[in-house]
Length: 601
Image 1 (cartoon, helix red, strand yellow):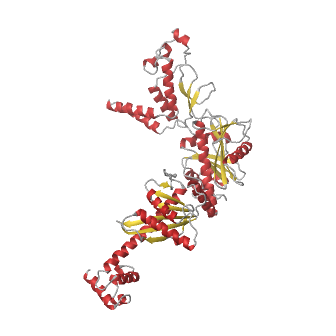
Image 2 (image 1 turned 90 degrees about the vertical axis):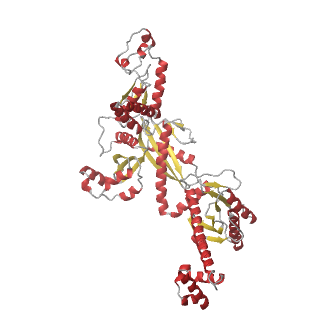
């Protein structure tokens, strides 16, 4: 092993498909590999049992000083990207592709009554190419299915209108066995032939649902007619197609010599990813970090990064793919902002990589500086919840009762998005009779903020009410009585769909289920519920026990409270001796208590 801190490097690598790259101390790329699971694959190079590795691998590992990686969507995409990068860079420890073997494509020739076949050679003659295909088996499966569903010609005869009209050709064996509909003798019109081609293009573009459906029908028919060999063949094709990915997000032959850029930013930092696409393949990738100085916009930052990266990589691409228009006027290139199709998939891939890089880098910063995470989270909450100030102080209310009895309210307090348990409070409801959740909420909110105002304490920036519109309206009523309804923001959260309600808004706000803001709100709600339920159970048990003690002759409400306060539970009162009881109540009462529990055991 070398002095490279591989353990720290491995922490940054995810369990996702992609391509990894190893560099030596001079910064030279020495190896490129693919993996279905990047973390597992890269970790395997640094196992302690070096005898499991061959000599070449041990030499490679000793030279590693830096690891980079590129995320992709599937293992097939990883194969394709690895292939193109090895051809581009030819790292020392990779097997050189000296025969320049490449993956196969399916081509629809640019001719009348176009033929369809597979090829490894691309000719720029106006023909349409689909692929490439990392799995040759899958490619042949899709060609076979196309041939069965849409019989097309396989000959290379010049099927001009004149030749067909003059009857220069005769149908061949392919027509006799049903593999061709005979356009050479006008048995099939060009219009009908082209309709079949459109369906084939849809299939090759990934819309294979119709093919799968037809295969299942054919399979059922073969089984019902006891044609088991045919059924087996169809089942194999069905399984291949079920795992088939017709279009790669990495490669598209129609895209040639373009630069792809995407940006992901936070309050203080921005990250820009760059992909270089040549001849339909990604040949370079780079992610850079920018530190904001003057609260620059994403448009300003991406404009700077585009010029820097194009200069760094000496790019002469005439097209750049970007997520939004940039304030750059250059005769050297034009901007493309794709909404769908192959270019949009490349933009999505770039954004996937920059997003992961941003998350990984911010995690590093936040581990070293926890206050950075808090500041970022508070700004995110301010943005998501449409607040005017950072929610540094948040309070959440929840009510509990048992069949309308023993109603209590609880309030939990979060400061800097973390629980401040010393500030938690609970309320025994004083003015509400029966199961009235709205009135209970109104009383709790009023008592809480009346006291804060009397004591001159700071109000929270955000109040969260556990409940829907009814509970929110009740809370707002109390805030208006105290004339602070314009000084704080109050929202309600409904449990069923995690809907957020604002006073006066007809429709609720829905946050992304993975949102950090929603997670903080859910934590507040759950804490309020837990704290309230715990207090409610204690109160219910205490009052139940107190009622039981009051059944004892000579023990009234005051004596029962004294006993519970001293012994905490009826169980301990039952176990107490007469002398221990007499230290809390009179000797006569102590004897009555002991006699009662002896007779009721």
